[in-house]
Image (cartoon, rainbow, N blue to C red; front, side, top):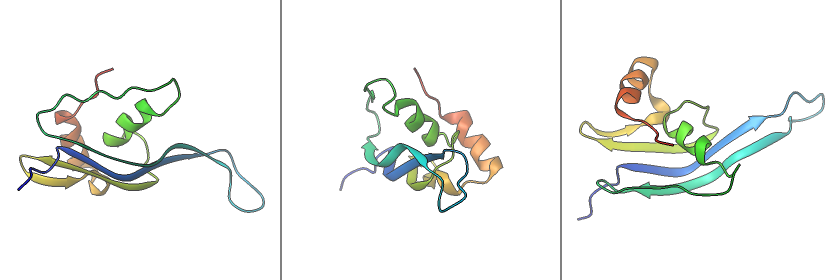
Length: 103
């Protein structure tokens, strides 16, 4: 039996709209488009990439500090699996006390 990953991302997307459109949908910037990855418990994880590739956006999405357009973020902590996208404001505040990004 394999241990569940600490953080699991499944087709995570973050899109930012570019203004409004009179006809049809507005144009969007696809900052992240269907990113999937697992971060195992007890591992060091470094994310590298070119400037503007979405590294900070990915971290902010895991903390739900930026709106998530699609996909799921599951964190397996001491209290069991936690779907970050479905947390209310009180639960999100408690989650953010235990999670952080290091730049």
